[in-house]
Length: 132
Image (cartoon, rainbow, N blue to C red; front, side, top):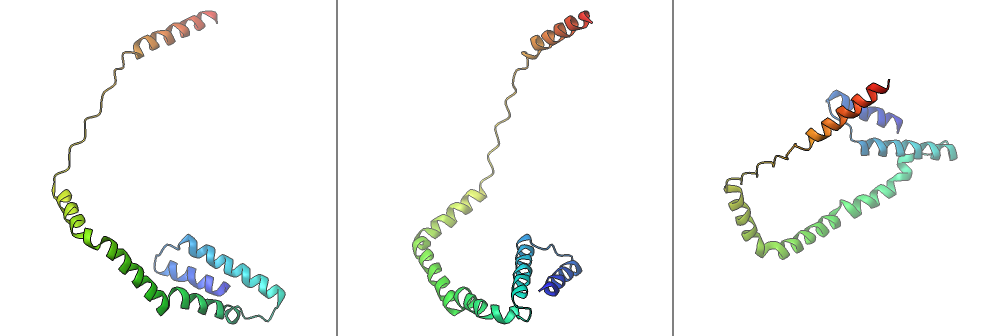
């Protein structure tokens, strides 16, 4: 498992790719699992032990049954939105063709309140300066 992790880093570095955080965490977890398994049985082959679990996952999530399930889900969504789709596309195209509306100019706030504030700070500074 550690060799696989090292190979992963080597390949990503060779091709200037960025390694995804999820993949690094998955690999780290797999290294820890292999370490625990080897501490329980030094002769364990983690690939043979994991094979039934991986095969089950692939059959459930990637195999023909999963493909059929995804196709049925897509058909349901298209059945629901299918009649509305031409209107939605037309509205999106019309909205895209219209020139963008100009943004309202930012309101300038009056800064007259800064004059009395500045005078008060100046007076306070002068008063403190006369004490020292």
